[in-house]
Length: 96
Length: 346
Ligand SMILES: [Zn+2]
Image (tube, rainbow over all chains, first blue to last red; front, side, top):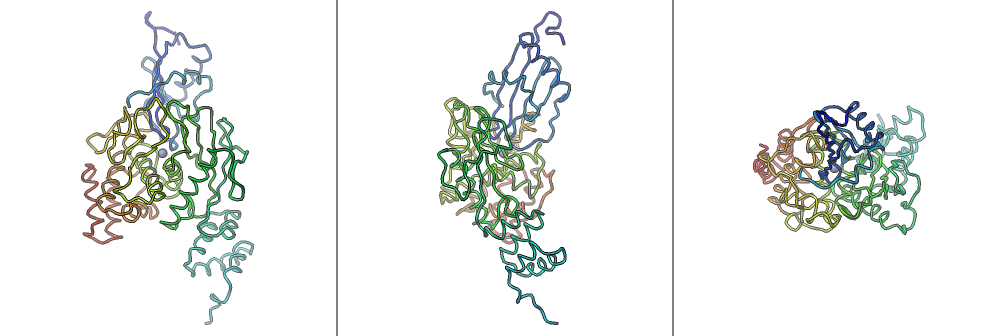
């Protein structure tokens, strides 16, 4: 995946929803500024959890959503890659 | 034909049910089934659940007594932690969260037992296992199908999840829902699953405080919010959407949220059935568990709706159950129906 398209910087959007609280938290990142391992983990998420149709989950577990250009991935907490944990520290509450 | 049913002491039957041959077990169970005592039901439930260890527990521990163990996850995401902080036999722990979890599990067990004669999550003496200090600054609590996990919170959004008894009641009730209706955790059935946990979590708190429906605050998660969260709780069953700054829960179908996030907005749209329960409970007055709570509980244990049930099916089931339990045209039947109408579900 190229870090930019047509010279435009791609922005990766991350959302965490669910949990007992049901809070929505969001953060965005310049895709080009992610490390190689982080970009690899993001690509694996798009490969294994593509699309924006939610599946049935487990009660009160977190749900992660990644958006990059036209691609979306919905990743259950149990499958969230450790390589992306550093991104979670940037999450801030946002309206649902 | 003479019957020996009432000559054989129950203790002997229990021993046969526990240790006898398949034929002896069957006879012992059939005999015990004539005795409609709670003890017999407990033993049968445990046997049906298929665990000899749990059957032994059911026989020896006695009805109405929980079997709690609280583990220390030691800040790891370990759902099988083995370090024990507190058991039924042990002394209170030096760990405050462990004691809070232990007490909350006990209060929840006590509510279900005292009010509904339900013996733990599965009504078959399932041991209640909890883990505290789950993860690093983990902002969550959840039931994983076997144990309840409690994070300490990050100190900013949340200050810990063992401090609010309704949180513990909420999580344990996810286990009860799994054992009864098995509601799919997605979309409307998922929102019903969430709502049922809030309903019973709130009643656990009300029961402990001895509150009537009018006296209750109907808040979920009061006391666990950190300094970043502006508000008094996470959800308000009385006034959905007002618990904290940014709370977007709807209280009626006109505000229903369609979203792919949060398993289809299960923590958002739960505000609608939450508010319906609140309206019914307050209209009926007194203790919520005596009227509306009883109706909701019977819908669960009688499997009145399927795992894919939506709001309308659940509303119809509770209305029908209210009429069945309290009579057609009763205040209970009318109040439940009116609550679902006011929330625009019916
Ligand atoms: Zn929940």
